[in-house]
Image 1 (cartoon, rainbow, N blue to C red):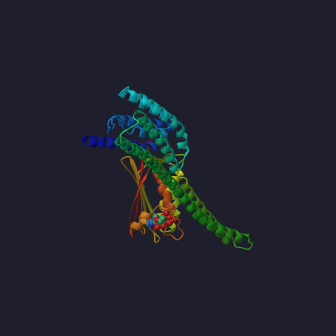
Image 2: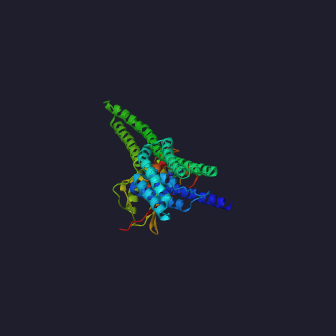
Image 3: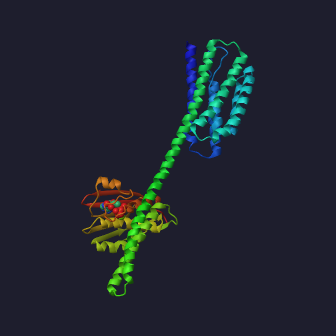
Length: 422
Ligand code: ADP
Ligand code: MG
């Protein structure tokens, strides 16, 4: 009874080696897609499992020894390839030699040489298969051959084995067979799942980009139609000069708007920064405020700027401008009755902190959480692309952003960028 209990323990130990093998495989292998390191990894892990299994063997009845060595051998060969197969067979036989040079050793040489030849032919077929059930079928063929070989040998050695021995043989090798199929199914399932997830992520981005493209073309069509109308009007000869001037001005404004939308979109669709350079914050922000100041004046917004000089960060000039123009523009638009826009730059340790504060309408928690998602806009002519672009630019510049807002009181954007020493 005690011996049986011990055997069960060892059997479970064998199973746990194999499970550990699966776990490692699952955790690491799939991530390192480099082929050679993959092979080495499978070879080492499977080799260790084979040795562990062969060290802890079960002998429920005399002259019958069982362990799970075939499982790491077959799995390792199928997933590692032919070179790993050779390595594993050599490891197995060397270790068997080390255990003892009896007739069992010669039997092992025969069994595992035949199994190696079978696996040699199965490996490329296994790799080529895509569907899980085809892979499982090939693994089943390999596992069956392994069992048939062992059973033939047992039968040859002791043709009239006791029924109890037969029962153990069937149960133990049956478990191994199921284990191999289970193993392949789990690995393949996990692999498929990961592939689907990756595809979904790609599709998601594609979806956003294409959805925005639709809204872009819609947004660009409006200014084009308006401009076309003005140009048609200009064709008529008897219009007064001031009217002409007005048409031209309005047309240009509309075209600028179209261009702005397209630039916004392109920045989002392609968020990588090329041409990175040193940016002196005071100069760059002064430029930004100069660009938006007519817009501020028109909306009776007073701009207040204070900055320390000689703070440098790394980034692409145009995108930096675009980011802050978007933020300033939003701030101004949040103050329809006029107000104060404060921009300040200061240094905190190795970071440059930029504050953009308005005294505008503010945002609720819910609005804050939606900020930066495409289309989210509370404005009649808004696109909801501005803050999304802001977020993506800050990200490539390794910056951080935090936003505080109170309805009716105003909003404060805090940006932090790593300082670069000249
Ligand atoms: P758009 O300006 O085209 O509406 P944005 O992405 O720039 O798109 O902004 C999205 C929304 O976020 C705005 O419609 C507005 O409701 C809100 N928002 C952005 N900045 C501020 C701000 N400073 N104060 C209040 N609301 C803001
Ligand atoms: Mg905006």
